[in-house]
Image (cartoon, rainbow, N blue to C red; front, side, top):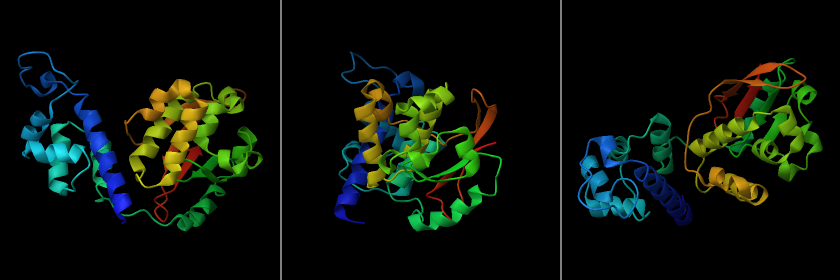
Length: 252
């Protein structure tokens, strides 16, 4: 890993921890509120440090992206911040403790799975939600991705900015938010794909800037989606074992 990538990871990790610290109040953890008004929202750094069993200076440096730390310390900080499983996994991944992602070309084998579902729409997505493959069943329900210029061939961008997709998916907002949270959960800070997508979304839908700036993470869960003129589908996210960096979105 280059120094640039290491610094990017540290900064993203520090920002993530800070955002979650600011979401908590002393009352959430059974701590006294203390005298006087707090200058910043959420817990103080010294409170998180005490709950995590680390020094205040060390925790401050961690939020500032100035130090690397051990898995044990990160797990202790995660418990102090009441992070759920998805958020804790994201913290560990940012710190470099998750297994490395498979090379992108391994996703080619996963694309063959799409055609095993001739009657169920399915698309193959990369880590930044770009549409890299799709089956015929998908084009019978949704606009054909082949007709979309490749730089815009991204599921999240289409949901947020394409009227045709929004007409087919009236509840697109919930689907888009959860897809973006899922992408952030699995993203690496040095991956230019998600950074470029976030910049494009911010430009094209500035009214939704709070979505794109949000640090919330979470694994995509199956849900029922109604497609007018077609039927209700159960939408599920699958991760092929031979291409864990890719994802299949299946409509069944």
